[in-house]
Image (cartoon, rainbow, N blue to C red; front, side, top):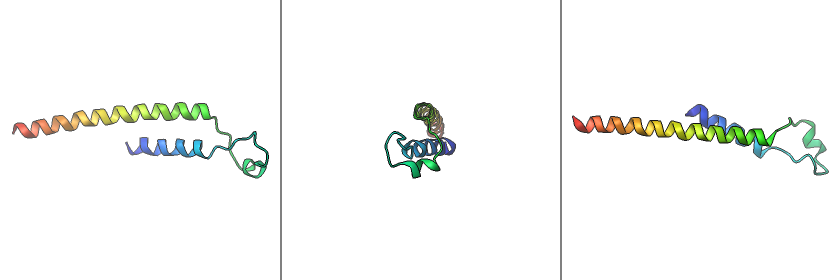
Amino acid sequence: MDISSASVKWIAHRVANATNATEPGFDAALAGATPVDLESEMVALADEQLRYEATTRLLEKAYAQVRASVRER
């Protein structure tokens, strides 16, 4: 889950720092910028969110089973 959280933070950082190349006056900012494909970044973010939710559900079920087995003792 740490990897998933780090991945989401990195994608969110790239999306948040994407500059609008159509606005005048951004030449200095665009000189050192790397191109960002917002659509692919958003798809990656959605994919990572689904993985994160699935992992949390699996962990929740595993912890519920542990709790149930402890209660049975």
